[in-house]
Each structure stands twice: as C-alpha cells, then as structure tokens.
Image (tube, rainbow, N blue to C red; front, side):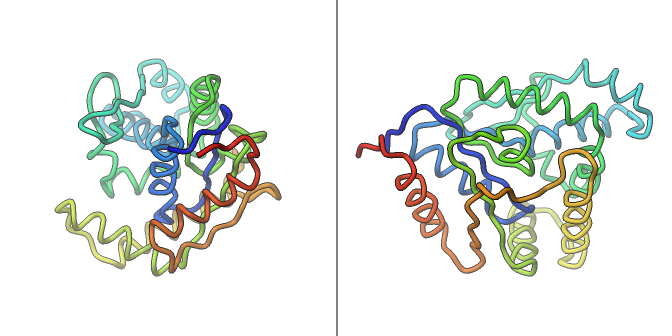
Length: 230
C-alpha cells in the first residue's frame, strides 16, 4: 500500500469510461475510502420513481429529499449503496434508473443536497470520489484530479457487457441512446455541468487495461505528492 498525506482524489468523466473502476482501485491502493457520487444521484432517482415523486414539482422533490438517507457500506468486499437502510446497489444499475438520473441530477435542490453530503464526507479527507463535478464543484481544491474519457463505442460496449453479465436484457442501440442522452444533459445542464478544469489530468483509457490505467494515475500522484513513501 502506498501512503500519502491526507488528501482528496477527485475523478470525473463520462458514464462507462471506467472512472469508478479507477476510483475503487486507487482507493484500495492508497488505503482511502471510495465514494461513488453517481450512486447518490441514482439513489435519489430510485426513491423518486418508487414513491411517485414528480421531478417537475420542486416542492415535492424538496420534501422528498428530507426522507432520503444515503450511506455506503463495505459488504463482503464491495462498496454497497444503502438507501434508507436497504441495499440498492443492484437496483440503481437498471436502465429504468439510468434513463431518468440525468434529469434528476439537473435539479438544483437535489444537487445542492448531494454536494453538501459529499463535502461532509470529504471533511475527514482520505477519500477517492468519482462523478461528474467532483473536481470542478464539490472539491475544486482537491490535491489530485483526473478526468477520464474513452471512445463512445467502447463505452457502449462496456456498459452493455456490464448489464448482460448481470442478466439484464437490453440492446446495444438502447445503451448507446441512453449514454448519448446522458452525455448531452450532463455537459449542458445549468447546475454543475460536466467539465474538465485546467487542473484535471486527462486520461484516455480507450485502449488501456485496468492495470495500465491505475499505473498512469499513480504515476501522476507520486510525481505531485512528494511525501510518498513505499
């Protein structure tokens, strides 16, 4: 395990770029906590869908947020998303949630609530958090910031493989349509749009293995953080 000074590692990028994979592996390598910010928005989306909350009704959304409690737990070695005491890790990966989450993430009161929770989680530092606005909005002064990209067709195939491996039936065309829809909304939304800042390190992992991607990120962290010890 590599040891560094207490810090925050922010990882941003488009959906299915492998940023969550990198975040988890970096957290393990550094001995940090992994926080999946996207899972928090998916949890909100699931709650709204299951409870008939009209996302166009701001009063209803604001009221519903008072009943949403999100936390992360390590269950049998994996990072589980817990919504109001229930493990929803599998449910929030569904296309049903994916088709709605970008719209939910554009809602100002939702973003304000999630950013506050994320910043609270980061107060103790020693975390790796991935998402869409972690290095630009949530932790703009994070010690280490990465922006992950990949070819869109490769992203589509990754996402399709993930879903089919979990027994979900969905066409490649539907997956591509969903990813392109989310890319557009995430990049153009008024509240905290997905954007790369000058201090983000860009990593294109289209043709990198997981191990190669991890080594690229660690190389940048080591070069920047002179307190590293083996």
